[in-house]
Length: 360
Ligand SMILES: C[S@@+](CC[C@H](N)C(=O)[O-])C[C@H]1O[C@@H](n2cnc3c(N)ncnc32)[C@H](O)[C@@H]1O
Image (cartoon, rainbow, N blue to C red; front, side, top):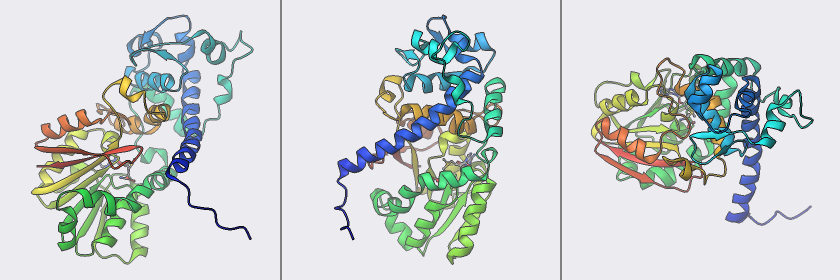
């Protein structure tokens, strides 16, 4: 029998995780290539020089906001050229490989036809470029709720209580003594279960409009034996209108909401005057130049089109912030507009997210 290997160093872990996430990035970008091919976007850009999303909307009749996120996904992937993240050009090689089906031996976009998403979801995404209205998390099907749970689970399970809540002023003490907590946009409830086990004197409520996610949470609750947890198939807007919560969490979900400002106002009403709100949201900057430093930027923008911005535009008039839309400046401005006066950014070295500690 071989000996158990030495534990991996931090550098080895970082490099190996980067290698693995690059394959995921490839999957996400593949779906964007298929959409660009199918919607005629590469062809519409051929020979046109630098185009803005509005220019491309004029040429295709498609929705400008959807095109901007798609254009950024393509530029982040190195398939389109851009200097500023606002105007984009299809280069000569890209034209041959992605646009020129009839005249180029190098044409490859057709190979992306069978994208790694349910065919009916891909059909609806393509339609969303025309109508402007995207898909909610539930529209992606029950397996999407399971996928989100698995993808985001480790940080909620392993870091939320020992590393993150313990760094927020007075929060661990309050939860130990007995507090009321709301996890808004709780998904399948991984964070709720982690907190409820650690703090038996407190009561935890999970809110999420996704029936698929809440069904997963309820099934696990039935098996858990925990008596201090309740789940509601309900959106942020359905929070109690009185100040009842000592701690509110929104983990990786505000940028997905069609009405994040409305959600923030609802949280402001439901939180006690001395309560704490923990926001976890995607690590991003407010400019293209800042975001260019992210080696997974193409995956972020592609995921935005396919999931986050799509959800945030799933109701007519949705804000459509998308995956990179809640950078610290935007988050702070919106929190203050919602009536919060304290806003502090925490970096817990989560590669994908920043954390904001917000108080009334
Ligand atoms: C990326 S998932 C994050 C789930 C969970 N917080 C986690 O960390 O695993 C985003 C969640 O936001 C939820 N969501 C979308 N719109 C919402 C709204 N208006 N109010 C509350 N949750 C919402 C979605 O249903 C989805 O479960």
